[in-house]
Image (tube, rainbow, N blue to C red; front, side, top):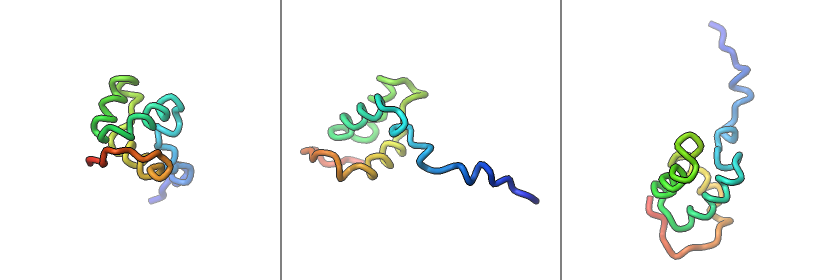
Length: 80
């Protein structure tokens, strides 16, 4: 059985990061991620951008782990 690897070679996890590919969404998430839980951030994104444009909880968490050291500190501890 032969497997077509053309899609596998061009696919990267980076392609899946909705937040980084949408400047308006990224600015919004950067703002709310400092004071909302991940679930609350998802709800806020869905309310503002709609279901199809809003990132999921896992995407927000992956984005947060990637940028958490660059964000200003906040007083609220992360509730996961």
